[in-house]
Length: 273
Image (cartoon, rainbow, N blue to C red; front, side, top):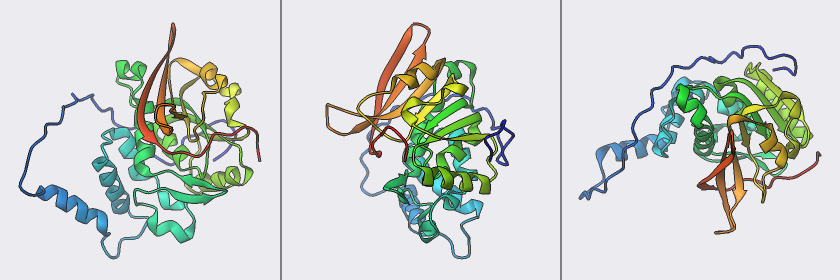
């Protein structure tokens, strides 16, 4: 991982194109007992086979299966989850929990988000109208606000031509640099700075993803979003007092906004520490 010109990461960047599939409206069916496949999925969630280490592809595959049960069906995102070793991005003491669908502390009152939440945000980012029109299954040029431990940047490096990730906390910036170097992510540029300012030198971006939530969208983010690009960020909802995922698409004549899942992220702050 380097701040120099991007080089291909060790992860496979080229993912198979996935043809869009029609969305089916679920129907309510009354059953006298739980379906067998649901019981099997629950059993899978409870334990891992003995003798399989955290580096095993089978362990990551089971995490992907759990994420599927949470409703994420975006194949390029699931493929990225299947190759990035999440346990290398958490503290050693928590490594055995790395492939559970749970958030974990990474220090400085910050967390690594649940895999299902990360997957949902990446799926929304990928599903921008301009990409759907071209059946494009890549994120293009991406800006991440809030590097944290670097896990999400590693996932995006698999799906993107380049990633710029901004972190305001120097210890986390340094930790992410170490983690991303360890897994060989070479198309990621890390920036230590104020995420509310984005990163103008590499703008415009096809996608902007924020890992912290506030009461407003910084104008810099909207300005640095390319026409046809999409922004996904947690945002405070006055309606229920919590946070929701806000999606903003930049079109030729302005911006279009939509609100999605309820989430809970750390507050978006200014400045650096």
